[in-house]
Image (tube, rainbow, N blue to C red; front, side, top):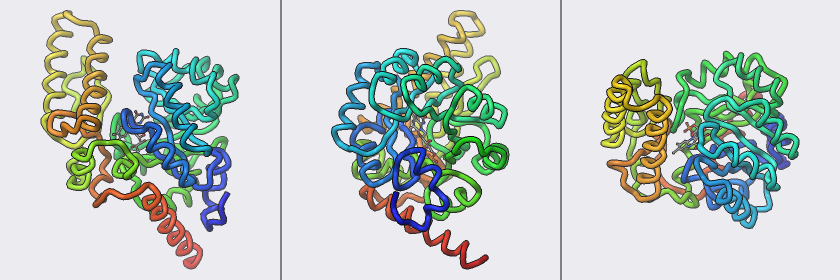
Length: 338
Ligand SMILES: Cc1cc2nc3c(=O)[nH]c(=O)nc-3n(C[C@H](O)[C@H](O)[C@H](O)COP(=O)(O)O)c2cc1C
């Protein structure tokens, strides 16, 4: 670990993650691959590969590629709703990656056990205190609480409320806070409240090492906080998972797709499962279209509200240095004010 004044605040997170700086770059489908993940980890932070819907053998190759680009600690994010989730769990268990993050719903105790028996440290996402406690009972080694300010699939509750509902009541495992964080000051404040570290996604999309298309990054630079909106649920019969993205033709097409699927559901032309699958593949395909192909009009430009504070692209090193510098200044201020 380094000699930062932040050690007192993020020691637990650094020890858990095996890093110098308890700054996590949250997994982002299509975007969090070897280049960004290794860049973050090489700067002392913690990069996380997005497993998303990657076939298990490709995911193993991405882990190997990332390992060839960094000898530091990094993790893999798996999403419970992915078609090949169980296959991914089985394959990742055989790799030498130490940390697995499970998002997109509540994993079974069995899946956590399987990973832990393979020597992995498992971090889960907790939407409520009740679920946080259940995850710990299932064997989760750490938790992420992610508020609705975040980009991508989000829960309904803001970070500030989750902090009061969950963080303030848990000490058994390290808790990382995510959603709406873009500055060192904010990180320092969450850590002073008990967070073991902070997870940022949106802020790192504009890193030079991030493979996102320049159109995607340029839209991030232009967008205001209010442009990153959450999708609306059109009908109770199809309880979609909200997604936060920059409003464009793609978000309007999502509304149209919902209406079409609700119509088909009511006529019993498709099952709820099929409807959900179509919605999920819309997002995954839409994100690829925008982030990789650069079609930011029709694709999905998932982004958190903190996008409004982003003004330029820059190397991962300069983003991390800036976060650390401002977090250090904030904790010095805390000490001086006491
Ligand atoms: C473009 C984009 C894609 C994302 N994809 C995923 C994902 O595949 N899995 C996941 O667990 N979280 C995903 N997230 C959430 C991030 O990992 C992270 O928790 C979140 O961005 C933190 O909030 P922030 O956007 O306010 O920084 C995504 C976020 C963005 C912006």
